[in-house]
Image 1 (cartoon, rainbow, N blue to C red):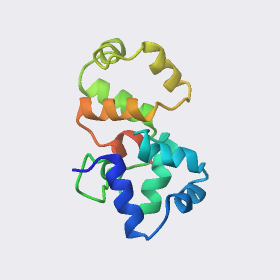
Image 2: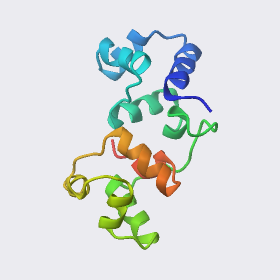
Image 3: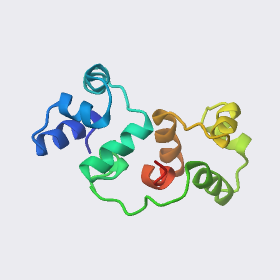
Length: 141
């Protein structure tokens, strides 16, 4: 499987697009998009969802977690609803979950109040619970 940077390069190549053209489409700076390639940065999740939609691929494919380009798991639920459901299904408390993920409980309460997790946190959560990023995120944007 590819890394995010490798996948993004391939997707740009398929569309015969430059980084600058993608930056304009996503309404981000060229510095930001170059940071994805040169510094190993991840996009904010809103930008990642826009990328996945633009390239017609799943978030898991975009971030190199799946070789399957499409994923039917993205749905209309919101992140916090999916996250809470997963915790309940695993019979874990929020405290236990956040401790195991090495994240502050404060993050959870921020997420419950409408702030969205950082991409790196979403990746850790998806890996820990063995769910796709598309399921975890849902079509919320």
